[in-house]
Image (cartoon, rainbow, N blue to C red; front, side, top):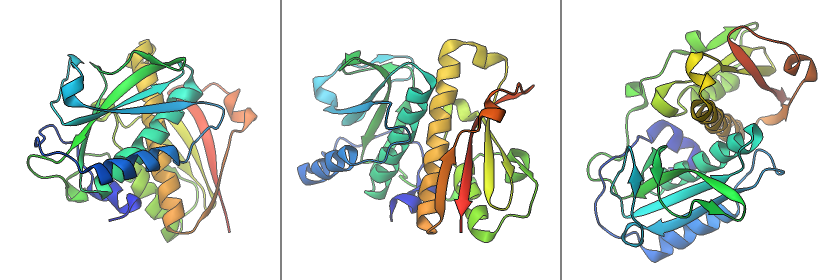
Length: 253
């Protein structure tokens, strides 16, 4: 299983075995983290790995696992989106190595700050005590027809990219993304509602958008699609009733 294929197999795991992860595998995970693709090179993201035995977890949704990753980023929108983009690539890599993972949005572990960045969330990982993978047909996601407005009929590769985006995980399964689809481009919007007026929920939405964008990137790479992410000022300046413009994904032939 490669990282793209892990999009379809990954599930959230909340019960873990105490079996240790081999040091060789941990070393490969650290190397992957060091070389990961970034959405915004101006926004730093730090990921710290640590063992359960060395840390005391606090928070609403604690999950006992042998290992954790603490994700650190800045507090602005671009930084939080970049953190989601980076973190999901790590999560999918762990899935490809047959390790279970779980995002813990309100769990405190590791340092609160690292190199001037704040801890945004924690990811539990290890060998699953139970099913580690899922059938993508069982994923509780809105159908593409509810997420997309089609202006043109997309080609087969673009359909595959949209299917990968649809499967992106999100806090409370909120799925805050909407797409306006043309034959060679996708306009991406973040859904806005009353709950996103809460600062933490707005930040989680941005993190979720970053996760979804990583799925688009990985799917485009899988199908050898030349992809460019652009931000169009005309759409940034425009006010939308139910959402916020995020970016435009342009696919070049």
